[in-house]
Length: 107
Image (cartoon, rainbow, N blue to C red; front, side):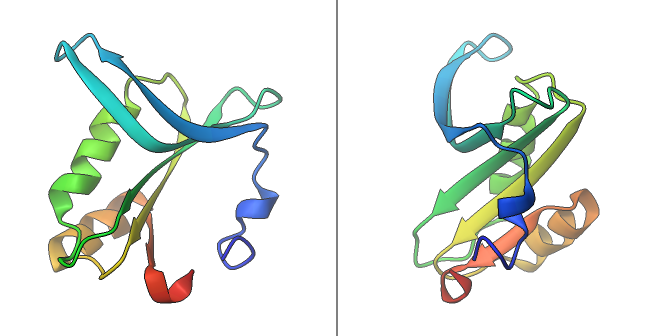
């Protein structure tokens, strides 16, 4: 999977999950995947993993994009991982924002 999506070529020095407060909503936020490089401060990757029997909706991607705004990176890449796939609306938005959609069979 890493080779298929060129993830190994990305300059990550830190990759993991993150949770913390959102001063805009006064709620806790959790990101399943947050990756960045100490060498390139302009780039970060954000991801969400869902192991559900229904397809991931557009709202999940919208929430990921909204939550990524907590981090001031000019270049952002998005990844959604799903057990069962993505709704048509999610696929359209993903295409518009350049989000990588990955289903279980591809992992």
